[in-house]
Amino acid sequence: MFSEWELVLLHLRVLWRRLRTEDDGYSTEAVIVIAALAITAIAIMAIIAAKITAKARGITL
Image 1: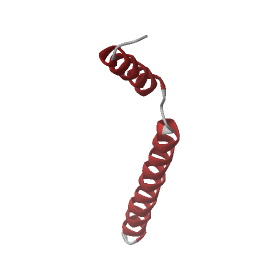
Image 2: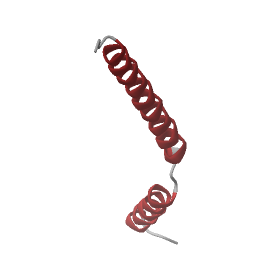
Image 3: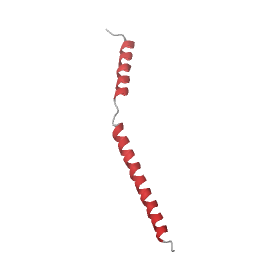
Image 4: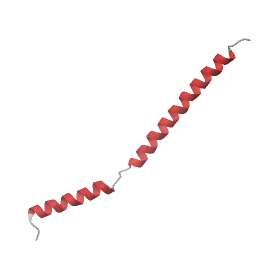
């Protein structure tokens, strides 16, 4: 039979292994965040391009 401390240590080892090996969907979360950032960057670039184009069309020679 195991003593109480041995059982506690065994339980802690099992928990530690689970925490080290399970990602719990982190990669999915990261993909969603990266996609949101990419969409935001594209939208900002489109706004800037539209403003630059409007200014360029306003130039008279």
